[in-house]
Image (cartoon, rainbow, N blue to C red; front, side, top):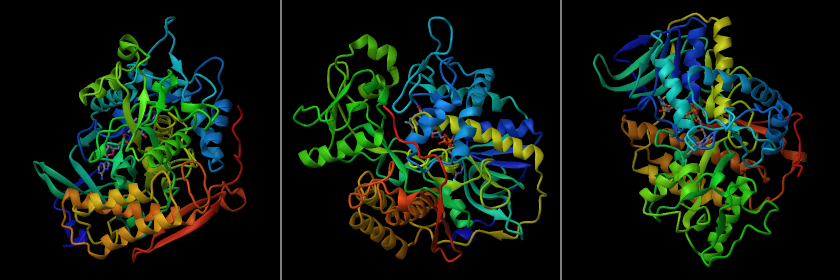
Amino acid sequence: MTRLEAADPGWIARADVVIVGSGVAGLTAALHARRAGLTVLLVTKGRVEEGSTRWAQGGIAAALADDDTPEEHLHDTLVAGAGLCDVDAVAALVTEGPDCVRSLIGLGAHFDLDASGALALTREGGHHRDRIAHAGGDATGAEVSRALVAAVALDPGIELIEGALVLDLLRDDDGGAQGVTLHVMGQGQRDGVGAALAPAVVLATGGFGQVFAQTTNPAVATGDGVALALRAGAEVADLEFVQFHPTVLWLGPRAHGQQPLVSEAVRGEGAVLVDAVGERFMVGVHPMAELAPRDVVARSIMRRMSDTGAPHVWLDATGFGERKWEERFPTILASCRAHGIDPVTEFVPVSPASHYASGGVRTDLDGRASIPGLFACGEVACTGVHGANRLASNSLLEGLVFAARIGRVLSGETRAARPVAALSPAAPLVPREARRVMQQAMSDDASVLRSADSLARAADVLEGIAASPGGVPCTDDWETTNLHAVSRVLVHQARIREETRGSHWREDFPDRDDGHWRVRLVSRLTPEGDIVTERVPVQGGVIRATP
Ligand SMILES: Cc1cc2nc3c(=O)[nH]c(=O)nc-3n(C[C@H](O)[C@H](O)[C@H](O)COP(=O)(O)OP(=O)(O)OC[C@H]3O[C@@H](n4cnc5c(N)ncnc54)[C@H](O)[C@@H]3O)c2cc1C
């Protein structure tokens, strides 16, 4: 059976706007759509609190301190983005960010305070000011999620459907969005494949960390929003820029899926990296040693692992003492101990894992995708704020700022609800058995270190999988199909970009090449499933790091 046949709706729900996903972006978009007086259907494939948001540890970046300015935040973001940021998008992020954080506090989110009762702001890699607001020490995302979920629950104009896996976009005869198809597991009359109809659809489906074998992202991060957009013919951009977090707890050679993160704040507090023979290897690689940018640390770890043949390196934070661990990093301490490692007395085994997708569904400054009525915000979107590399703690902020912008558009722009004329073209389903093979190929050949040869190997595996589909309509196979679609375009763009920039490292083209590659790669699928990629020049915003 094809996906199209499986998607004939057995039930129908309607609203003014359908929002897909209940992380920081989806929940914020829902509250802003209500302020615009719209009825909201908020659908999410797991429970409401599932998603990357609740796992965020470090915090939210915003120029909230007296000695800080949005201009300085803009400068740091542009440096991290390595010449590919959209300067207007970054300007929106940094100037509207502080008020968005204050609104979140107004909604009831409790951030950590200093001794004087002011917001406690800390610093992370790449920031030249203390501008990271955090909650519960290292549990910021959980508090953000709690506060937003509570606010949404109080609003009778927002209907929440959990356990609802969104499949594809429904469109009118002009090609505009008119809703989505979705699969709901056993909720009374809404059971099986149905349709959520609305003339505005907001994708807030998060990232695609599960494309790789090891990731910090939760199981729901299977790139569904990007895959849906691709099947609908929408543009996606910057998929080759995936940030790998250097220090993820290594749980053994067969560990797969979501792995616990050991925040870079632990290195910020003085922990050091040592290799299999106990040698500290970041000194001499970069002036900031362990606090070098994430991509530099991740690459150095991969090289050291390959040189020594060890599957991981070690993080030594035994100098902290128990009290510091308990007060400053309670979540990380608990997660290490749950896996039998006591960081108070032992070195912690760590290795890089996929962490953040800088690219996604291409949008304008107000979250509009290239299809009328379709919007995207949060990690699923490519607003251009991250360029080739995300600055730490800018992603929760991006979700808040651009979800609010979509709310403003929705309050002023009404599209008519019109009959549905088209589903996205049917694609054969990839069976769940292919998932691990595909993820391993992506980790082996399209992750931190890439080359023409390695990317060709990854592309071969993906082609082989496409040649023998045979999946059936069920959650696992729908998600595996989405992972495959995202992987295909990611590898395609990584092969085209013959340079090293930000989080995209080509061993065979180790230099950044502004002469040829200050372009954004923008791809879409033809109805036949072929990838069409355009090079769109990026203007302004080249700022090199200053010490
Ligand atoms: C371990 C970790 C630590 C992090 N630390 C920080 C940090 O300190 N600061 C920071 O700024 N960022 C951090 N990030 C990144 C940040 O958490 C995410 O980028 C951000 O939370 C994404 O929010 P979102 O709303 O876009 O997506 P998510 O929070 O991932 O939510 C996506 C939602 O979409 C739903 N969904 C997905 N597919 C479908 C579908 N087909 N149908 C229906 N629903 C669907 C999911 O169930 C979920 O509800 C961290 C991420 C991780 C994983």
